[in-house]
Length: 465
Ligand code: 4AD
Ligand code: MG
Image (cartoon, rainbow, N blue to C red):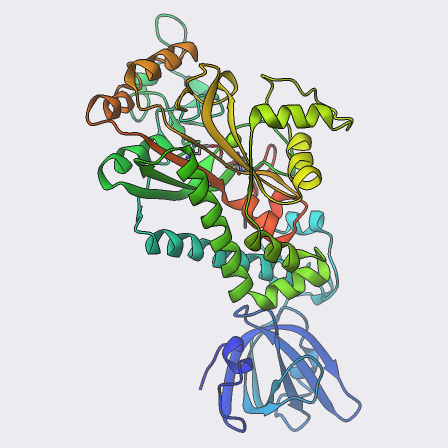
């Protein structure tokens, strides 16, 4: 029977029975006793399986002894308890078929040794073959499936929102334009500006920065919804926390206020971390050994302690009293920088913090104005080691207040007519948040750079493959 390596190692197959595994060689070691040990990985779990190849194999000298890292093989034999360290079972092969050789093994980029992350980013198409990217990939998958499972269990509907859009959901002007116009021959209007009415959609279009505005429409009919998809931001921040293309999870909840929003965010994050602890012990053990010593214990601490809640105003006072030297100024009305966020969550509280009620002028137009007239019902969830991981808010459900805020931000009411409709027809209080999916992966895997948390990173000057 052909089985995955995970299945073969799980101890559920009859020992002494026949098993076939298919995968790629990690290492080959030849013993003096005239045997070779070939470790084969198929990515189904962290561990490779050891295939013991006796010299009696017909192709032992001609092929088995030429196997190098990366060769594709199909190995069949007897499943046996293993004498070797670190694995319970091995396959004592009676047949090894080489399906694909590695051309020029000396120059094959993925050698069985530690590679720098910078180097691996240059060979992003080959890095899934490494231990680290195998582990990160399986953890990312585990998190994505847990996202859908959490919302499914809680009665939310998954809504896909458009990737091509005309609206700047965050009003921050960080959109990538989508156009089929010929750059060498742009149609110009009377005013000398590009005439987008001649473009594919008959108007200017962009890649979405957030599915929120679109998902609000479904929230105001199906009550509990979420979107989970790619989002794009042309922010020129060449940092270890920003990508130009990232995935965002955005639930939206009808009849919810900010306190309920924060409660859901906390429950949701804890659910995701529990899923990783339960399902990806093998990969997390590797992360703990090689990347982040306390990777497991800090997730356990995270799920077992309540998040702290403080207002922005309190946070500013704490930062000012901290005696800490920051690069950026701390003053009521200025946005919190990563260094401030990290001080709050790491030094001051030592666990995740929800900061609420930010000054209205530093947050998006759709956030609900508080009674003080100076702050909005916004929240950021800050996690130790990374800072902001979630941003959310209660939405402004009052049409007159929303209109004022759109004016204040210089947004064209006509353009947001459809969004205003939600406030005209059966408006209700509602709230939601956005979880940056790669920031979540960075946190769980203890990665230093968000470019290692997504298969194909897109950042300023970086768009390979
Ligand atoms: O705080 P943001 O901008 O919020 C929104 O987009 C809202 N529409 C969400 C909502 O209420 N439905 O982004 C949400 C999260 C951030 O907390 C961060 O984790 C992540 O998205 N994020 C990024 N991740 C990677 N690269 C970037 N350039 C990111 N920008 C935001
Ligand atoms: Mg934010």
